Length: 398
Image 1: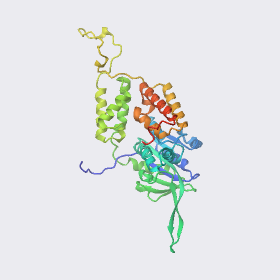
Image 2: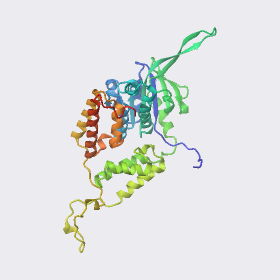
Image 3: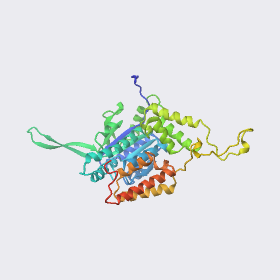
Image 4: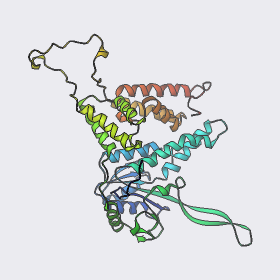
């Protein structure tokens, strides 16, 4: 691959706001968000605290479980709904909250012999990475608030004696996360936003009391100062797949097969651009074919056309079978059984692995009814195995 002349293209903002409780992270995030776009969505992990600022005008979704997959699903929902900005308030819960990364590691390590945390991270790190990938790859501006904690270190003074030195505030999340964001700002108890890291030159070393529309204007000018971004091939693939589902009976299994053929995995967002283009070409080729006709009237056939007959073997037809989408009843049964298994001690990581092995990485709402039934059976089998003390857990060491 040859080197090319660097050029700036229009982009979406990735902003992190770090501060202690009471510093004004939520209000600052909302004020900036309203300056970036008209439609704002808030993923609220703070027991509805964002709704106290409802006069600013935004939509909200509250989380009670902070499993990384819940965040990922909400990010995709905000994209599909066409929001301009998503505020994640806060991202710290995905690390240290209920069902967050640290709790998942603790659960997995307790099930592993010897309680080895390093082995547990092997299962949890991919979930954390998938969450960061979803934030970075989202087709809208994303603002994340992060709780802060005091950071200390043990250092030697001039006389050689060790002493505890206060190093300042550190975000409650995985170490090094700040490198992933375009702009990182620390908010103090006076509600001042102190820019600590930025790729936007106009914000370098700046301090903004009660930050809001003024910083949004600077960011908008910086983000749009460049060539239009290349087409979002993943979004085009998603939209065309939905269209094909209606017109050609395109099923989730068809999608999985096409993704595997084009890029070797089930997540087009991680494909190289040429692989995304290959997937789009496959879908466009299918869209160019005539949809399967339903209940054709023989009288409308052209004169002299042969009379259609049923094939001797059902597999002789080349039409893709139409699969019924998953029903609301099956969705409710899956969610109820998953909750029961969680209460019985089956970990979130284990359930996630089981789902992926059974139906892939598709969201539940994208499954067919037959896939939903298969997942129900797998969950039920996992539940029966978990209740038999003499039976080893097949996912314990994965």
